[in-house]
Image (tube, rainbow, N blue to C red; front, side, top):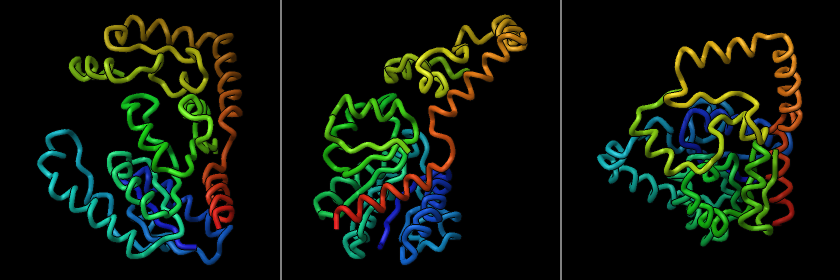
Length: 253
């Protein structure tokens, strides 16, 4: 089958490369056309655009390069329409991918989102775009699956510090989660102590380190981390994702 993958950063390139390797084991005739990086290219993908050419950080840089970004979006849509892949796989990179997804949906091309954007932390309005424009969501964190299910029970989802005061002020009004650490988010409780802003000081750090080094607490932490690993499903996310994507396409056809 023909796979069209879109990633926008180094981590997406890595996830995409691993996914490609797993898909090749299931689908030996698979071909890949990608927006990614060196790792995906090394796996044999036809690289349309390197993520380094589309790496714009911050509002000012995005605004300054808006014509270029719009050009990338236009070309991506044209390229998908021209090559007619069997599936488009979005890898994180919501700023770009969620502007491509509605177009792909109109073309009638199946789509899968691998590694959900962090809409569960902020910008929940983007969930509506995902529900309307994406056919299947693959997530790597169990609480993210639960998050999507609260929005739509029919949506196919599969489970496979200190900052600047102004940034913190803004984040506190955008991010609506009880915890910041992924460990605590997955665990559902404060497994690790979070020292944020004014709490992040030498006295509190010293106090928490002493607690961690106490033998009883240390053993409890190790035990909980083992349980956390089991909760995540262990290794093999790329293989499970590849199997889910291939099964999804077989069902579609």
